[in-house]
Length: 334
Ligand code: NAD
Image (cartoon, rainbow, N blue to C red; front, top):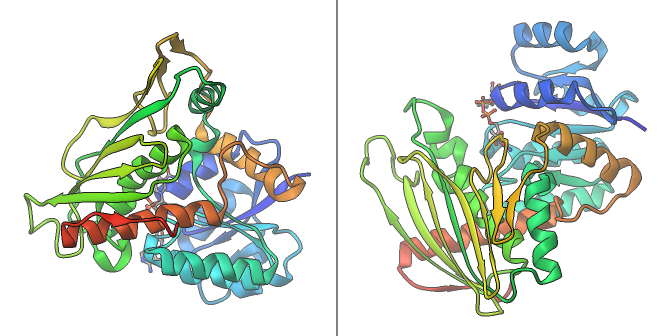
């Protein structure tokens, strides 16, 4: 079966997803949602989407009556995800939502509840959860190849450009670097160690308060403590380049990914040598796998559902709390 997907929010990431989906066997674009009529026209022509499968932000609730659409992929700015996902859920269609799923754990929990109540599945665009070098490290770790895991380091950052973009607007982004890029280190710390953190400490630094206004974090360093005693040390920033590296250290070995989360090819090595799985566009792989998850009930090795994304949002809440109070935040209720 082929997963028939409507894309919502035809911006730069949607463009990448749409192009990568051209190589999919199990997923295809059958619908479009945009507030810009001219954009709809161009995309319709390019992806062969008929008029009756095109919607705007006022009309998309009518997707409920469209038999050509199985799932809607929400690719809008962060602050819009919550309301849009809940509206899609009410149409009875499955939802795929970009990261961060919502702005905080409260929003995330509401999204998970709404999808459950509507009987639809909610997946989040965690493309690294399908990346083969990453999965090989996870397989080796589960097999005990690294011995007892002691430490994870995650470095996630880039120098952000245009000060007018939504990513630097608290209203649309919900925060700063942590919401956008630091989330990769949060999520990575969890799938690389295979544990859920018990506590968080965090420190924020801001060198440019004009570009990074109140509520928009420029740089945050954070630490996580895990039940086994393993610890993680991570950096999230919008003001430094060349930061895309994961390092996992165990008593008997190590694993490194650099780049760890960019569009690839992802490069990995362990104490046993290089990892050389061939590169396929992450979004192609993701949509093939999500088709199997949504239509065939496949269980991915690393989860990509709303509950998984909610765990990251709880950690984001705790990191922001820790930067404000300077205190260690316990996550034992996670
Ligand atoms: P973008 O600005 O390029 O695209 C956002 C789109 O949303 C635009 O087409 C814009 O017109 C539309 N939009 C709809 N309603 C809007 C409103 N009220 N205000 C502003 N724009 C509105 O951004 P992007 O880089 O494509 O990011 C979109 C989402 O995808 C974000 O949540 C981001 O975190 C996520 N993303 C994920 C990855 C990944 O690798 N998984 C990569 C990039 C972005």
